[in-house]
Image (cartoon, rainbow, N blue to C red; front, side, top):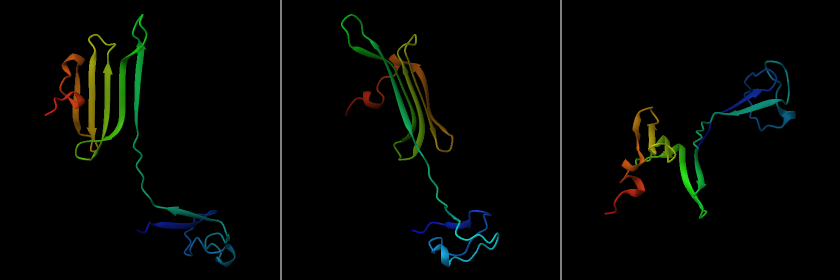
Length: 133
């Protein structure tokens, strides 16, 4: 696989025809400014960075000790069931009255795939809580 590469003069930015790997002594001077030896090599590449983060807030249970989760916030890029990347924000807030479940999933084209905001007690039978066949 070949990648588009550009070789330019570091001083004036003029495009240089010779290979950037040629020894400095054998390079012809820059046609724009006459400089020898100062080149910039650029690669025309694309890159997409995908990230996700999860925040869990816990609080003491009470006199017996231990911790209980009171908030679970997840956001970032994930693959959906079709293998496409989507942006997802999920917030399980047990401190709200009544406790809430919120989830918004947006496709790469900006289409809202899922938008849920409901009491946590109504959010049953989804994801890992689905009944097994």
